[in-house]
Length: 170
View 1 (tube, rainbow, N blue to C red):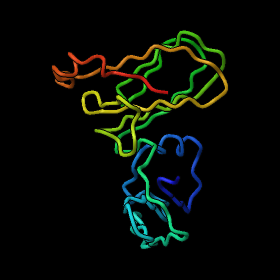
View 2 (spheres, rainbow, N blue to C red):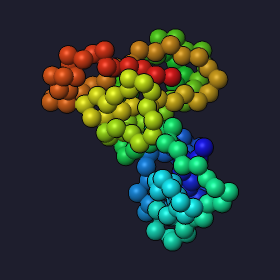
View 3 (tube, rainbow, N blue to C red):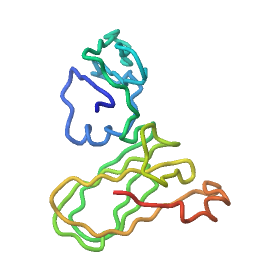
């Protein structure tokens, strides 16, 4: 399945691609030539969300399905991890304590504000109205402890009472 197609008229770095793969674009990003979200749900046309008017025509009788990758509006940041210790991801409200490190890897943390579009793992939920995705790139091995820092009033009494709803997925 294809969830979105993005065409750029400028080169994108590996980091830019990794950091933006779970983020919904505004459509006005510099160098964005075409952006098809496939949100129509039926038919054989798809609208270009870049504002450039490149309406897509789908051929071969496409089957419309629910997206499988989480996608939404939020923030994303990359940190290179090459040793043990605490790694903080600015803007993502997340710290990772690396307790074992067997190489150098890039960790990309994406925080989506609200529930993401696309399917979520069974039992997945937002915490304080946010949803996190952690991706590891590289061939090293890591053992980590995760911790979130929430500001005053972010967690509701229901969140505190429902700690079983806090889950990690791979």
